[in-house]
Amino acid sequence: MLDAMDVLLYVFAVNTLRAEFGLSNAQAGLVSSLTLICSAAGGFLCGALADRLGRTRMLVWTILLYSVASAGTAFSTGLGSLLFWRGLVGFGLGGEWSAGAVLVAETWPDETRARATGFMQSGWSVGYLLAAGVTAFVLPRFGWRVLFLTGIAPALLALVIRRGVAEPAVWLDRNRSETKSAGLAVIFQPPLLRKTVGATALAASVLFAYWGLFTWLPGFLSAPTEHGGAGLSVVLTSAWIVPMQIGAFFGYISFGWIAERVGRRSAFLIYVITAAVLVPVYGSSRSPGMLLLLGPFVGFFGSGYFSLFGAMLAELYPTEVRGAGQGFTYNCGRAFSALAPFAVGSLADRHGLGPALALNSAFFIAGAVMIFALPARGGLDIVNQRGV
Image (cartoon, rainbow, N blue to C red; front, side, top):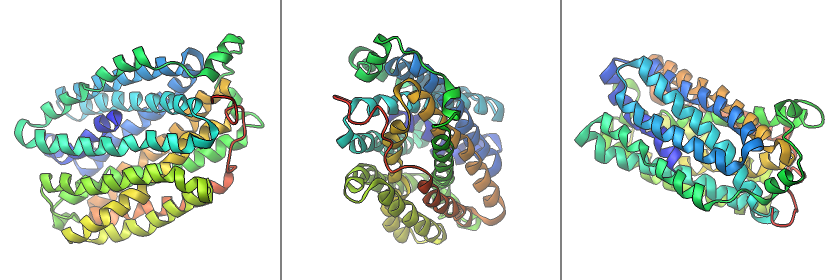
């Protein structure tokens, strides 16, 4: 929830920052792209460190990093400093997901793991709502610098985690047996290589679609109609985001239940194919009522499939390389998705934001194809262990 808030404050303030620093759509998209590139680097490094040093310890350190960096954004003076601070936010975000998703997956039993990771992932939609609410209240009254200062709040959560969240039993058992982390190289060797390539391709496809869509949705809603936007005010933009993210919340939560009934692969296909159909319809609409009506469905199907990743990626790798494998595959996908905000922004400069959003449908379809490169269930040591 809180890492989503810190990352998405920029998304809601993007038009204000464009005016403040004289940025083009492409330059504004470049900031989000760098955030995603740095999140990939954070995921690579912190996933491997979580195998060696512990899931909870890395979770605390990365939360502190992105909190301080989010507040540091308030002191930006131009594009260069904006890139610096948002890059640090991204590094913390990527590391936090790698440590946190493994922590959850290793703590919950096989029969409820998909639901548990879905519940964890639902925090993103709550954070999106929180960012919208904070922006609507703070930005018109106090300006964008105060808005980013609120990003320091998640640092308080690190203290709670450090005191009250234990390392997973499966990781502690591995440490007691003196089995050391095998390192990143193992995931590029048989029999894990094929899984690593397939998981990376899948993550790259849907993360491109997600960031290309949701990075620019607030900008699309608030941009003037002559620039391909919907022409809503800042306050209305935040209000229209609320039902969309409520839909996303239920999408995340319901994925685990649906997957338990029809299978993870079938559930994933339902979500991404429906999203591919909805996105062009949403981007071509200029009716506030229609945008409000479609929003929850875009949120539900355009986000909920992410609940697959926490459970599926964890099951692909054994304990000694689980953080490295999950961190690499998911965050390598994030690195590729860094092209999405810049690509959509560049298209928007020529064709308007609404038409540019349709690009993301192709990547939702690509994700539907890539899911067949992976087993429906991982079957490694995380599965069916007592307590994990």
